[in-house]
Amino acid sequence: MSGSNLLFILSGSIACYKACEAISRLVQRGHRVRTVATEAALHFVGSASLEGLTGTPVATDLFAAGGALDHITLARWADLTIVCPATAHTLNRAAAGLGDDLVGALLLAHDWKKPLLFAPAMNPAMWSHPATVASVERLRGWGARFVPVGSGRTACGEVGEGRLAEPVQLVAMIEAALARPARRLRVLVTGGGTVEPVDGVRVLANTSTGATATQLAAHFTRCGHDVTLLRAHSACAREAGGREETFGTFAELDTALTRLLGGETFDAVVHAAAVSDFAVDAILVDGGVQPPGNAKLDSDAVPQLRLRRNPKLLDTLRTRSRNPALCVVAFKLTRSATAAEAQAAVATLFARSGADLVVHNDLAARTSVGGAFPADIWHRGGRVVTPCADRTALAEALEKLLTGDPPVAGN
Ligand SMILES: Cc1cc2nc3c(=O)[nH]c(=O)nc-3n(C[C@H](O)[C@H](O)[C@H](O)COP(=O)(O)O)c2cc1C
Image 1 (cartoon, rainbow, N blue to C red):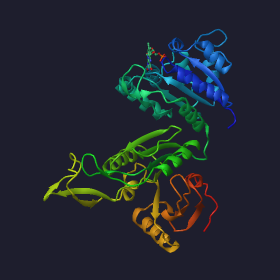
Image 2 (cartoon, rainbow, N blue to C red):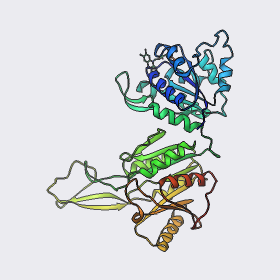
Image 3 (cartoon, helix red, strand yellow):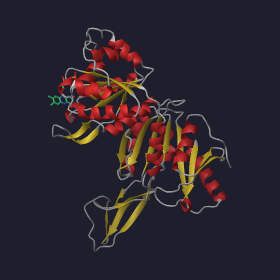
Image 4 (cartoon, rainbow, N blue to C red):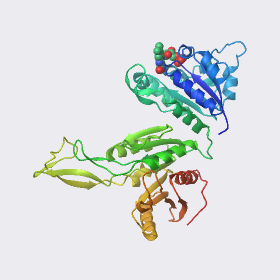
């Protein structure tokens, strides 16, 4: 990627040191970075550090001699603006539209045709405070994007959500936001396998790793789309950051899908999750019947599991969606199927689910986890449009199909 003009706004958080590392990486990657710091930020990082990293002086004062128009010129110069770290105070001020300092005036003068990112960093209580929650919602509504916060132990010693993302994630999110796809999509990707409780410690699971979903989500993000990855707790996390939620059981996935699809407007859902067809209905042991999920069954007893069928989540995705034009991408895995059997399986899935595209692959053709993953993408008419050799090719082909730039048809 050729270098871009990046306006990096720092506010007063202990996490300013991480922002310095992100700035250093961005400069090394060929970007031109200009920094603006609040007065509080300069308690955490020296202006000499910021000037040394970027080669340009840090701007702080709205009324600085010779810089009185910085709040307009810097906003126009930037291809992308990021507030990082974004304190609770700066987020709340930005959402209120206050312009009595350089940061506030710059954000008011922001050109919304260009990306504006916030990378929050704060104590968990500040992050979940209603004022902050409402401000995030408001800023999102205006078109700002948020780098997801991390969870764990924060600098103040409390545990929860609110940590600044790692520098490598910040760089990835910034470069993804600079990418300009033909059409910017909001995509929900599901991946990994559900687990169904037997007793309090045992589960029925499947062997899905979530690798396909993770790679698809990473590729769509790199292409500049707004991606939410809904993955199994055990599935691989996305390396380059981005919004993620996790699920365990079928019921948790079901609830998350209803909330996400009903609450936000997605253009497409890529449903790669391996959803259990069955849940444990009851456990028959020692002549009695127990509900699933309780305590721990005695290891000496040999229980019988009574299963019940889970409903097909795929079939209801569009009806749950706020967007009736949601594009649904389904996955069909067959086992040593002939071409005719594969075609029949895909046709059945189209007929049942109303999917727009089906990705078909066969277990016998996979070499190993992370290895070859030959897949075909089918249109509703049943015609194979793309033979893909591996997950990378699949991700590229799906992205082109979803953005309306179809790859060359094959057979
Ligand atoms: C040691 C220390 C660490 C702080 N870390 C944070 C933080 O991570 N996030 C935050 O929202 N506020 C933090 N604060 C409070 C802010 O610095 C304070 O609200 C300040 O007014 C923010 O101003 P600004 O948003 O204009 O930079 C911290 C304060 C201190 C003294």
